[in-house]
Image (cartoon, rainbow, N blue to C red):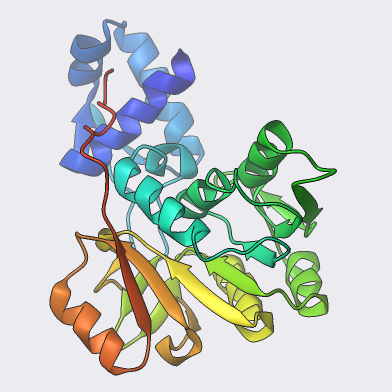
Length: 268
């Protein structure tokens, strides 16, 4: 319950740039002491910045909202992108599933596939595969190893990157922090960017999965040029002009239609 409340506090700060102790008390029916303790814990983890009477965003080009905040954002769009991505996967394929909430939806869409080999640095994706698929007949699962990045539940560092250099997958599905015509593919975290760059170099086919909010943005660390991408799968929220530019550069662009479903509410 407490983790759920803290997640909702983070989402409110993302939406409104700040939140007060009084607002937390009113919205969640908790004491001022509990509200301040929640903010102190979130501040200690670097997820927001405590100020007098409340908290504000802790943002910058290297700041990425943690996984628990992003999970419910653009959920129906990410789900549609995951389904569309799975249509490109053939029985017997070897695939790399990058970290992130959109690639997690790809993992959740593999139920009609057989004899896949999946390599990932994402602990949520690994958990999803172990819980939902047969490791004997459906999916052979390989984890990269590496140092666990707690806010993302992912493995980064030299071990993770080295594993990808030793394997040559048929298809790599890559999540991304930003897609820009000028700056190419970018990511918030330098170590994540390094691992993604290795994927770009080693995969036979590179498929970027990104909801419309990622377009026109530049994050902190460069991952690679747009020319390294074969296919981008997005949703109807992506800017049409930019999609046309990408197609003119030889990038295949697929637009997934999201189901008509309401997003998960903040306090639901």
